[in-house]
Image (cartoon, rainbow, N blue to C red):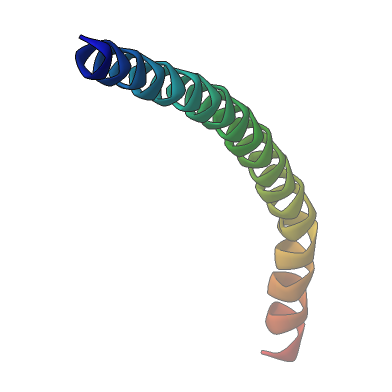
Length: 69
């Protein structure tokens, strides 16, 4: 009777450990998703800034090309 009780206790402990690890993985995945979202927003802002900065430069280059003709 002792061995089956030990087996059941070890099985329960194994499942409990797996549950704790699953919760930790879930929390890290959520943290990673937030970081990816933040990085995506930063990249979008940088792309918009670059686009805004490129418009005057492109118009100047267009004017320079027209002056040469």
